[in-house]
Length: 159
Image 1 (cartoon, rainbow, N blue to C red):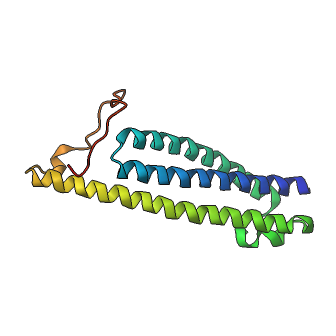
Image 2 (image 1 turned 120 degrees about the vertical axis):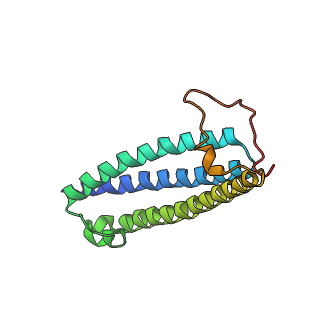
Image 3 (image 1 turned 180 degrees about the vertical axis):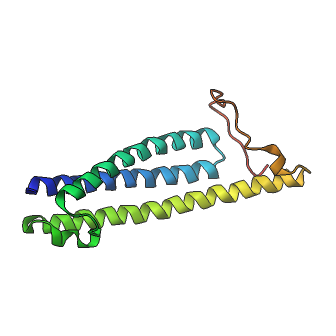
């Protein structure tokens, strides 16, 4: 395939890095919302994450097709530069490193947000248990679809 195919793949890696960077920012916002006990903000962040996740799904489908068309199936990002035309080697190396860095950063922020959520959920369970109720008896605790909490709704998880 011509250099245009490789260029398309490198552009896709740039888009992928951008999506991962956006997910990193959303993970930070999610952790902040949990720390501030702001369920409305948390819900908004979760909706935004869902939109970005759908974008990632589309990028993944394009990535698989491009890799197949370029004959790069199974080539790790760290070796991408050695499988592109010489004039694109530096750009391929930079694009691959940016994608790897964005993914590594995202994993760190996502883990931090998950840990913050889990910590607060454990605190909620302790409060419920201390009040004499078995948390397992409460079920999922979700409202029926279509019910929105008030915009100013904030809950103190530690109350």
